[in-house]
Length: 427
Length: 154
Image 1 (cartoon, rainbow over the protein chains, first blue to last red):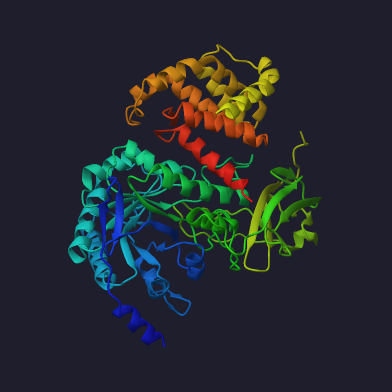
Image 2: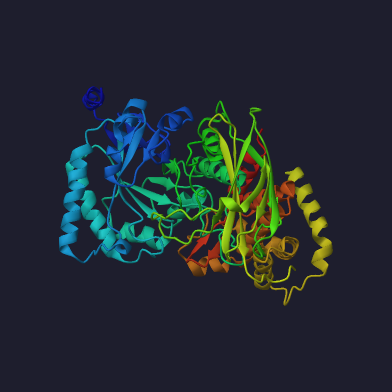
């Protein structure tokens, strides 16, 4: 059965995708001659739900992802089956991961890997664009080092020689003018500039234009304010935006992009259509680990289609506690309260967890380990209210509240607290 | 527009009392800006909004004049040219701070009014980000308007 599906998909015609300009002089992506606005998400799970909520494309980061199994098929085949296109990411070396742009042997190996990836997938009908590299300049780089841009120019030439029918997009972290200028000076083969931007996502296209960018643009990752962009507790823990703030951020970024950057924007990919541990287990994921969608998904549906989905996530209206951003001694009893309503009137169920603050913190989205949880800290959980006995071990913690509607929708909140053997007196 | 102006007046009236007790230093735009950011970072939202309001009141006329002289934003790569538009930049930034502080104070209509005023009257204001570039407060304000409107959708 799987074999026959692959045959069917492989026999479908490869798409021809190109960048063009419309009557208004705006850049557009033409897929087999028809204008194609990317309503995309980064990730490769919950693909049917993406389609159902109005999305039409996914973005991946490494070429191996296309082979992963999803719904019993390869990711790229499942996308083709659903009519979802793929911005196929090809990993390009990061110096922080040990790649040396001064080493000819490493450079040659990378060029051959890029060539092989393009040869393998260039005729697949789901392919939309090549995502050549993601933040390879480094998330904290100022982009002034020309070596990476020059090598990307070589790599893009290889891609184009192998496949003249799909544009090359390269993705950078943030819209710093020095990066844009580096690309303008050293990377003429690029077709589309992708920018990953969080709290500044809505203004990223305007920012690159101001820096001199005149080619097409894609907002290649966006979402809530990043953990590096938000206020912190006194002990340095980043305060995660509420579920409602996150949903509003996705919506406003998407709408702002459409309104303000129609001249260069080909669309966007929200981050991340799935679940990911990065600072916390709920910061960037648009789904829970248990599979329920979060309000960010509903927000994207609204932004893409101007309609709400059939089933909406619960809406949290209150989440507070004396523990919130406070320092307590071990063994204290504290209460956390939450309130939520469900737009569809579904019955809500709450789940409460106490975890350590993550200490396995990385940069640039690198994989992080989940911190331990402390079920013994939950003394009494009564629906939307929980009594917690503060942990015995001094350290930094979070309380998570998850509310589910039982129909695939949920909301998640958390607050930070700290345990000290001798906490300072309350002010 | 009338509605927005009424809300702005209401906002300023609300904040007049605390403003009288604030220390404005040498009353330069730069000093008040720095105090507004300081209050914001210290989560002292009433003071942040009041400092912002004072700066808007003092320098709004010059800011609007500077905006009127521009047909497009000054390129954000020309730091000197951007910095010359000090009143435009400072008042625009202050309106953004006012909006942020008012959101924290759960005064959503007033926050919306501050953001909309910024978007409509000072769209070319720019603010220096310590990471090394200028950003436009009006872009941020536009996003907040959409976010607040989304949050109130039924």
